Image 1 (tube, rainbow, N blue to C red):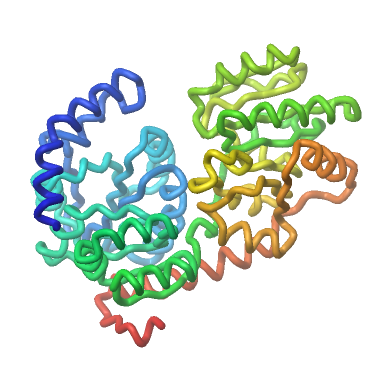
Image 2 (cartoon, rainbow, N blue to C red):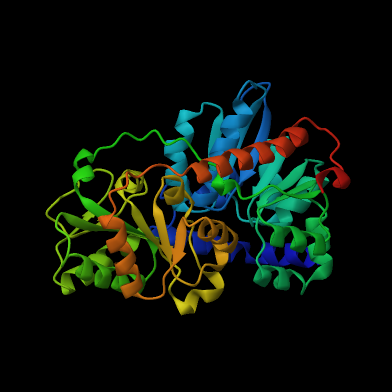
Length: 428
């Protein structure tokens, strides 16, 4: 089966090259670095002398942010390692540019498409000592090539949904070959741990979701006057959810002055379309990026940059998380509520949160998050939040959960990196 996969991906290689070029024209790829994905001549290998290379591969922004605290923890008191981070998306590359410049032994590259000869060349060029795949980044050619090169490989923060598990069970022999290749599997939840067992993985332990680990954000506020403004944030919204936000805004503005709705769409290229929707509803609206100033005469502010949302979350008591109210996305629903929860925000979400089901269960149980089903419900809850005089504070529960998750994760990663024999009975 792996042989068949290899043939298919080799045959698709020219088409994938064309697809990457089309995405570049559509501005969905980095205009200069996009060739890192498709040509070995652009791998741009840069290694430090006498260092062991740890390669982390993650898909996008959320996974990238989750491994930064782990890299910092490995670096504490240890000068033996350097790090390579590969990601897939343009947004993750933009974030990596700002994050890794703070750490002098980390490089970022785009992940080459999973074609055998390309992956084999990438591995032989970079010569990683250890490979960590993050979340659900399961690439057969990469995994098999790493095993043949005798490179230890682990799956960390593993997340397998029931839908994904069923797909793997259509090809049981391939699934067993792939998942038994991992030397260590750290699952993000108990459901995934069971799925990994069924897929014949070995050395499995549930260490918790590493996205719960808090990253120290040292951004200095630019919008100091926000503290005098009542705001609420709608994060990671998808098409259709902005209409809900506008309805909520119209209700709230009847009662509160100095009030602003912040909308941060999941895909920032939709900002102009959202602005047009606001104008059609007779709302004063502003789109701001990293180089713009916050305007207090606007009713709605649309965030068009990944670098400034943190400041608004610091000032906001209440946050709505999108991709949670749309029935059409029921089987691929929910966005991460972790960062606003860590900052002490009250979280609201719709009924569809399949991608972060375990996280929402924890937050709902501890009354940090609450499910809403209509814009009236959301409006009423936001009114109550605005009327409270309680000072907003970072969540002690989230801080404790962050520390425990980091400690538990590092316990097994340190064993793995020090080449200790990790046996299944120890991990269970």
